[in-house]
Image (tube, rainbow over the protein chains, first blue to last red):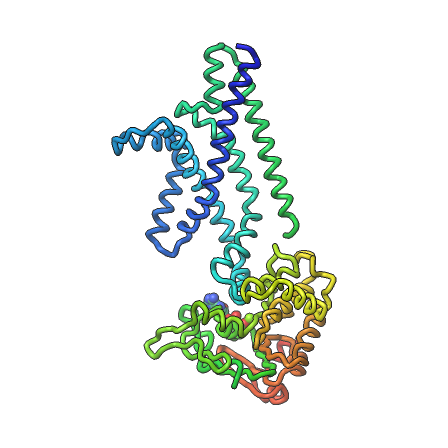
Length: 216
Length: 252
Ligand SMILES: Nc1ncnc2c1ncn2[C@@H]1O[C@H](COP(=O)(O)OP(=O)(O)O)[C@@H](O)[C@H]1O
Ligand SMILES: [Mg+2]
């Protein structure tokens, strides 16, 4: 196999990795906020259920969660799902897992806000919803950005776990080529791709953090 | 008609009764100062008046309308929705530590509540905010962020933010206690200018000379009750032992 063909195949895998990465963030960031509300709910039942969900997500390997989501419908419900299920299952498993991590980050950020901000907003006539989305949340985002950056960078590397469902993202392809060609090269190339992918993500996050430095 | 009337207010935290049957009244254009040792319940009283705390007994009237009360069976009745909005528009509150919104510029701190909560036009709100800032001596700080200002400047922005909503009564909870002595004067000067405009105010303060000179009525609180009240002159020459002890402490 020529170097060019290998790079082409790895590049295709990289695009699928990026797709997993982007969709996971798209779903898990809002879902995590919702989960954090459940975690801080006044209702004890909701709070407990959400606590169990978070602790399972954080306490078991993501790879097992991927397998559970993918095979679950068949073993539990006898459902045979179509060809697109593999990808859907990957996005569900990643999103639900990352939402748990993001929920804890949101929660710590929200709880770190001084009560005076809520009180000032209330006296100035802001509704509960406006208080959260205009006053509290923008400040929470700034506070949690470093922790979010950590998770996002971990996610870049975690996308490779999709290999456990034999999905053709970059790592799976690297492994296939390596086996076929009995060469270590594909792994090195994949490592380089992950590294560059991560460097770009880290750079982007740093830019966002800088953009928020206009106040303290 | 009084702007604000609080009748027989009681408030406890856990088992501790912090406000024990206090009544007070604020008329149009009147300046009421509340003084007293720390822990006597002054802040709690303001927080009850501004509905940041719910009362355990008594009733609160704004502009001749009963807005919050406790039924004989102990049920608390508080305004909701539109009614609550209306009540909130009656008063403003200036905090000891300002509580400005750090992610908003000075101008947006003042304009946003007006536009978003009172649904007034942005152009009009901006113009009014600029006039208020000029009155506070902060015309050049409109685009600054709170973190770039001194404490005294922050507090003047907080006062402008409260005034922009055209409240009937303005509450101050120790507005200068978080400030260095050299910054206290500029804030007191602004509050004094509001008194000259006959804006009704309730001021919790430890600045005795200021209270004496600015107030129409003074309340000395101690351990959750009104120990002495009357005109500034009456209260400051009152022969009350607890008060003398309090002033004695202040002079040291
Ligand atoms: N949220 C609260 N929970 C419990 N105790 C409180 C709370 N707020 C105030 N207190 C208590 O109520 C008393 C009066 O407090 P406060 O009204 O702040 O007094 P002041 O403003 O006169 O210094 C104090 O003993 C204080 O510890
Ligand atoms: Mg106080």
